[in-house]
Length: 338
Length: 273
Ligand SMILES: Cc1cc2nc3c(=O)[nH]c(=O)nc-3n(C[C@H](O)[C@H](O)[C@H](O)COP(=O)(O)OP(=O)(O)OC[C@H]3O[C@@H](n4cnc5c(N)ncnc54)[C@H](O)[C@@H]3O)c2cc1C
Ligand SMILES: Nc1ncnc2c1ncn2[C@@H]1O[C@H](COP(=O)(O)O)[C@@H](O)[C@H]1O
Image (cartoon, rainbow over all chains, first blue to last red; front, side):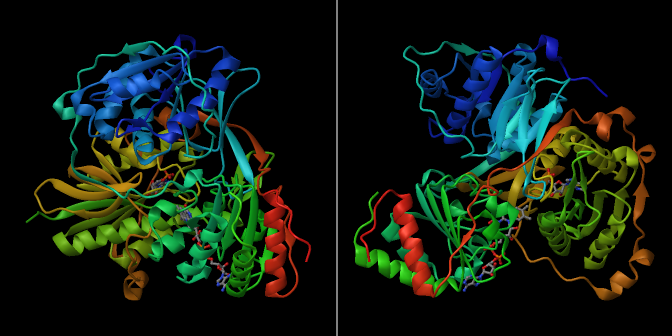
């Protein structure tokens, strides 16, 4: 097998790719830092936050207050707007020069674009969309836990011989610790030249939906196909519960609700205290998104629906009369405590 | 106006995920009992390729790495309107992770003679990594655009791609050749032409290639070319740990029980009724 560019003996340190948007480090990168800090502590490694982009001073200053040992900036005008080609070119240069042992990134569209390209450029292993990270007891190798093996089975994936050991993690999998440094961490800069031919793709326009971020919602009422487009009912229940509305992909594809509220493998991993799931069958691609919920109430008229395997309270019933009765009950009992 | 396009569509045949069994001894997946289907977003990629062909003319080739039975699914693609199909089938390809899979597919694209576009699905329902399309692009050293909602080729040598990003969309001008991965559900895949299905083998027999047919280092494919390995398997405690309490009664009674449970869960005592 062709060798990676450097091996385990030459590698050290854990790097977290700090994705940023409008000058802010995105939530998944901050979530990753908490887990990375734990892994760094156990393996006595240093923790570096990688900041790529054009004018990165502000972001680097914000990063230096987070729980990490060092910020490494890789600035270049051609790194913004983000393209996978330019960013993988620059990241690969920094990685070849400084040889991290582990590289973690958020499984956002940009993070996955970058990770998939980088892994090939660096000839190394990538474990995608991990649901947990750990260290193998004796070897100290990074273990990435992945599902997608048909639901109940989780596999721990490792990369023994090549470096860096790469993994991506979906937003919402880890909780943000909120730990901050008293004194800012040192900021290093890696100078890189990004030639024009490393940036073949032109970004013509970028539109943001400015939607909600349901990954942080404490309570969710979730609509599946069974809601049949009657979103006002679900929205009313969400209102009395002081909850956000989430949806399965079918509900999103039907146009009943915006894509920013889609839960699941290609949507968002949520961790609400309470989730009321209305008219969803419980496909694995959906349920991976609600694994971390507290109390799960599922309403479905089909007693065989797999969603009931993933629920605390199983309501085998036409959802409409039950939701209406529940709504009436909350309305008559007055406001919900938040 | 643009010249005719040659598009290669990467189709993966996947087991219906709920039917897959896991062999704990060998730590492998037993797919024999599971029915298969073409990975749903790959069907959207195929439809996109066919409508590009309708629009600009040209040719659509199908490419898949998998066991021999996958040929039957490629014939369905021919019946939908694809022009030719290539199946990479060899035990030597088995056990490939994303690095080895993307290399194998990239090598086949080269052997086909290259193309203007390589279209993939956004992610596979079993692998679920979304990393193969960027991997193919990196091996071929060409640009990539992932999570595409639409593609147009109005200007010579460029694809205009609208694609999804976190909380929004972006429009890209991507020079060809390029790899584009397509979002699931962006179009309605057309029906098969039954005459074409019956005649698929006369129209275009599926070319089956082994590792020896590809110009690729045997050590870089399959399990041997895969840097990642399975360290262990375990059963998920999540979901499995749920109460699964089935509520009984009329809809009103069920609603009352849910109400009480929610109030208890949130630490609020309910007034006795
Ligand atoms: C690569 C890939 C990625 C995917 N990613 C995601 C993802 O991120 N999120 C996601 O959600 N899906 C995803 N999917 C799709 C997923 O496989 C399912 O198709 C989807 O979750 C089903 O949505 P649903 O449960 O709303 O619809 P259905 O599966 O159609 O289920 C509807 C349910 O409602 C019930 N019902 C109908 N009427 C009533 C009523 N009046 N009262 C009570 N119950 C009723 C029915 O019994 C049925 O069980 C993905 C698929 C693929 C291939
Ligand atoms: N074995 C394969 N044969 C053909 N195409 C594949 C294969 N594996 C992955 N792909 C393509 O890559 C896409 C993403 O797959 P993945 O990276 O596994 O999520 C799929 O939707 C397919 O288009």
